[in-house]
Length: 324
Ligand code: 13P
Ligand code: SF4
Image: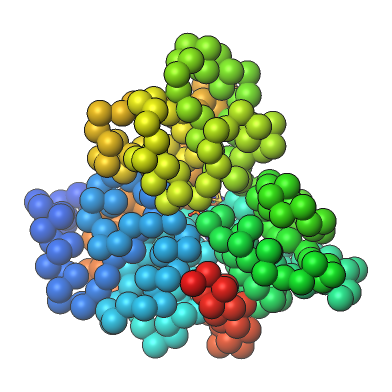
């Protein structure tokens, strides 16, 4: 739905941009009483200008607790949408409205409604990487940081649908020993890694630890010494005694890994072909220039029907309550 890049109305020409974008963004932040929330997959410049940097769970917790009047969301659409669901009275800006998510796109609401109807008596646990319409049809939201913990809190006898990521779903099944009915969605970025090339890298760097995000396919995860959300991977890379890591997730996170452990070496896991397809094309639509321009214009903003927002809020609040 949000996969096509669109030129935003009134996008600046280079001549209209201030010389010091960082300073201009800081000044707009004060003027708007804004907070900039950014995901680790954003460009390094955006990471460096953010007030808070985190994984999807951390970002939604920040969105739930901020006192700022304006939330500038440097991430993808479903993340900014979650911030808006939690903050109906705040202005939520997304630098590029076309910054969608292949995983969210892989779960269209009409098809999911039929899937749900075919599995009566099932509780719906949805990964936060889905649209507000899917959240509105869900009982509990989870992220990669708390999916296992949340499923463990559900009574053993309760059948569960897990959507939309089949890889995270399989990982949760393996960790909890629970049978889940999986929606067959996936992320194009995390399914792009090549096992063959990973094994070649492991041979070249025998001391390296493979660390991976649970959105990766099981064939890749079986080579990982550590599996976790982006925040968990970052913490692990800091605390582990290893000096070299092969990182199987979007390589934007390596900027933080390198900042926090400059003496260590971080090697991005290679994609199948000789492309940059391990970079999320949606996340990378946001740029520092577009972020500045969004703050300057107070647009583009996230909006949604109030009925959808109210229905989507309930499972997000359940997640936040179950994650403390
Ligand atoms: P986390 O932020 O939960 O680590 O998930 C990564 C991701 O793919 C976000 O789109
Ligand atoms: Fe969506 Fe995958 Fe990009 Fe994350 S990395 S935003 S799951 S397409």
